[in-house]
Image (cartoon, rainbow, N blue to C red; front, side, top):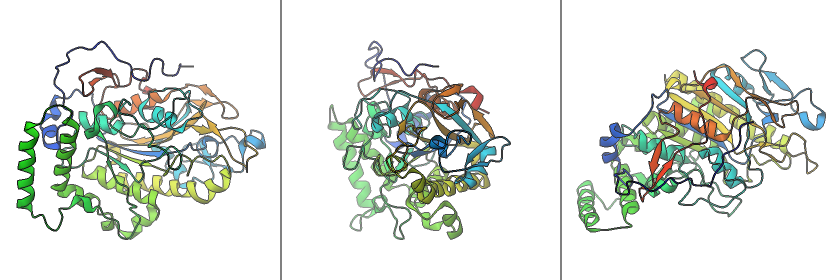
Length: 448
């Protein structure tokens, strides 16, 4: 079995070229002018939508059913056939099963983190496994996929390269924000645009993207010129602030972004198909943002780590009555919608959580607990094979039995599709070099 990510949380090479140029802290227009200077590989996808099932979805009840296992393992759900002969899903994902011919399912993922959601989320989203070191997001974290792709392949329109919605997921109710979603050592300007309003609400809007009633365009331009002059006089420690201001100015003058968030322009029938709930409509909003030019849109499916997919108790009722129908509708409609618009071929869709759930059902109200030793995830579109299952778990879904992969391999595969070398050397705000995802290797069998 491939070892989990070795080494320290942040692997540093010898400090070299301290004065090397970087693009950190630059506004969108400068990034657009600089886009051709960033090293990339051949990309099979131009954008990515990450549906992150925060808390740990049950692989046994969703994508890797075990109908021949003992009752305390197989659970209450029956397997149903997918559009690929011999591949079965749990019975409460019928629409998802109807999309299997477009998907690659990985059934052999594993890592070292079983207790701390924060560390498991960080591992799943960055490929860097720090063991059970929990806690909130930190400035020395490795950056999110969207932060990296937004820098390496800036949008060709004035839209944010990286968007997170509909929550900044907390590590437990009232806890700190989880790591893995932010710019980390790339700096605050590489953080995502965060949409915290419910796109399912009748009055959904982002007033932050419009000028206030007391500021006309000429006054706004004058403020921008003044700010530029003041920025030129500042020294040290202001790069992040200047970059954030530059991004704010860009968004305030970007009609493409204002139009992208007008989810009310979508047909009611399509909105119904995605699901009239905060998550279904966030997935639809992701499609609109990608269509406008955003590179990576991430839907974190929980306000806090314990709120949704963390089914320690009442696993089957919660999955059957709420979680699986919502995911089933949102994912299947997204793939159909992208395909109908000619976007699926160049848009990678990833559905993954921080880990799976225990093979054996617990006695705490028929729940399943954390299980990092084997879990499943799904990829579709953007350079990924359709109708393919990679790896396998053992008879009870406890350990990989064939082709084990780590989160670093999954992240390396995502970067490969998006045209970013997984072993790319990037520099932090002090020009120190870091290798993006040195532990991983793209899963070639998954790539089309």
